[in-house]
Length: 262
DNA sequence: ATGGTTGATATTCAA
Image (cartoon, rainbow, N blue to C red; front, side, top):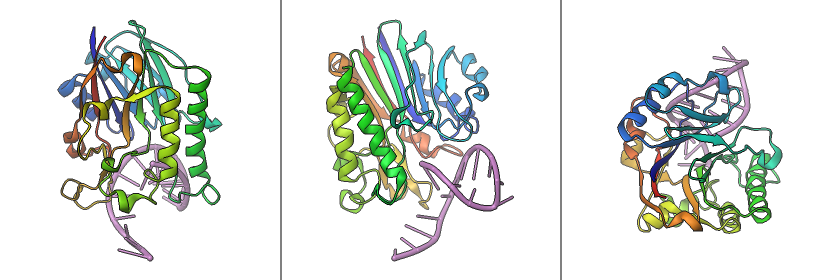
């Protein structure tokens, strides 16, 4: 059984309902994981997605902030939602497909502006989220699992437009990269996107503040697809649908795709 | 060094 999975920070699922539909129609992933839905679960616009064949949903939401959802053409059952770092935010939801694969959808805290937990509580919360993830993987080794989401960290030098200029910018600091790496190692996770596309600059986010995001191309790869080692070799066809960043009233993130032959 | 934009909600905060 092969299935295609996508992850997209949608930055308001209610405002961008039509863009979600456009991606569902144009690219037709079997499973679509969204972050920053910014909506209570009961206000997520389901009907249009159902009409396009996405009859299954699991989600966590809150009013105005955060929020994660998984829409699927394939049957899935909820497999838990955890409150990493104890923030009381809707930042994680898990679902299990009928083939036994578990999908974890994360929205890691952005971390504020100053990369110092002594003066910026949000940065500390981001590091704590990743430490909690690491400890959870040490306590309970994941198997047959996929982890996706807006991890708000671009780990590699070629995941940002300028490694040197971003070393002190939240999302690319050595401290964050180290924390992310520890979580990745603790769960035996493979970076599917970079295994598929090992060379070259690769971005999934471009700031709204650029005059011309496409021409400036000052992007970062904040959105990730990981898989545990036991299924990682089944992954192929990774890609980032950059076009979506140029759609009318876009999210500042582009969706990331991978296909699994399982 | 600074400011730039967007969304939800409220006239500010978070990203």
